[in-house]
Image 1 (cartoon, rainbow, N blue to C red):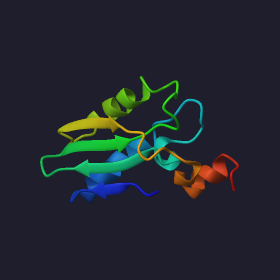
Image 2 (image 1 turned 45 degrees about the vertical axis):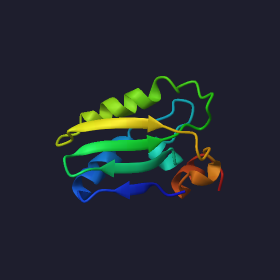
Image 3 (image 1 turned 120 degrees about the vertical axis):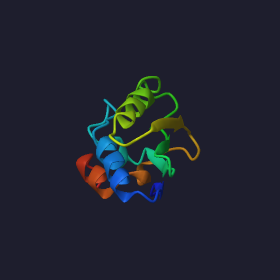
Image 4 (image 1 turned 90 degrees about the horizontal axis):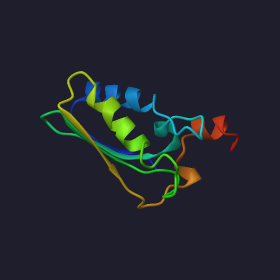
Length: 109
C-alpha cells in the first residue's frame, strides 16, 4: 500500500520523508517509511503537517513511545508550523505494505 501524499510543497515533503527514514521500530531494523507504517501525509498551505500512521500490530510494545517520538522529530523540521501524528489500525498493517527495500532487508524476497 503506497502512502497518500497531499501537499503542494515538494521540498517540505522531501524533508518529512527524510525524517521518517530516521525513525525505526526498535524490534525491526527497517525505518517506518520503508516498513509501510505511514498511510498518509498531508501538509496544508500554512505548513501544518498531519501524518496517519499505524504500527505492525495493536499490541506493539512501542505503541506509547514511537508515535510521539516521530511527531517530535517532524515538529523540528525547519519551516514546519505544526506536526500531528494520528495512529490507526485500519487497515491493519500487512507485510505487503513494506517496500521492496524493506522486504529484501528482512529476507522476505
